Image 1 (spheres, chains in turn yellow, red):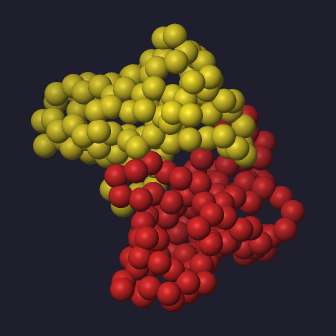
Image 2: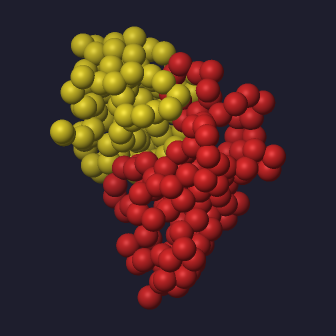
Length: 116
Length: 115
């Protein structure tokens, strides 16, 4: 079974530029999460999708961050414009369904963003 | 609101020595508890979790954790560590009543195993 795929693996941009990250979840997984992991901190949920609908985006900085999952499969997270404090690893995770035991939750390897 | 505190940011230990990574949580509602490991340049991998039942939970790679409700703790232990255990370890909680699966993570503990 293929895992959660993310690209690119690394990205370096200058502040005020835009950037996009891509996530391909495990086949058949309806629930998709984007977490932000700043150096020295634990991952923080940015947005959760159930199929192509947003379940929770309460911690997404909507003035600069956007995310979509148009066909309920792949997802894209965008930052425009980027700030220095956006430097972090962006983790994508997927699960067949959303439930608190997270029995079948899997994480991708992440995209490491450096904003200079 | 829920929060997770990992009491040590770094834990250096010699190979074959025992180790304990400490985790405390705060929540007004019941939670499930998790430990994840992150090896360099990799995603998070589940080590173990406590859902209910026995408070001593065994996970992969020889790790175990004990849930202590009165102290709201979920400390991770291993009796003898290997060089390959060098990694970042995260404690996390999710809400029993939640239908979202959202995880709230601690700040992480870097385990450095020395030869």
